[in-house]
Length: 80
View 1 (cartoon, rainbow, N blue to C red):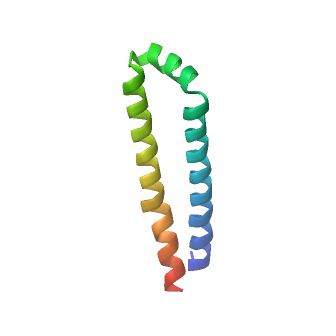
View 2: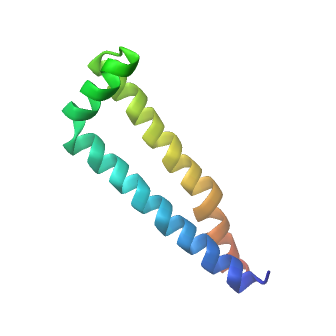
């Protein structure tokens, strides 16, 4: 695998992961009541705890995107 192929791979991974992140964020904002009713019934969590868990998941997912996709992509572009 050459560097150009790896760049394209990481670029598409970053795009797909950010699209997933935006979808998750939109779903959590627009469908907050529905999501809380559904997961609250399954796991018996309060609204505040559900928001905390959901936000922590979004932050961890974004951190993973940056660490495993974006930083290697930028470093490959800087190297050559």
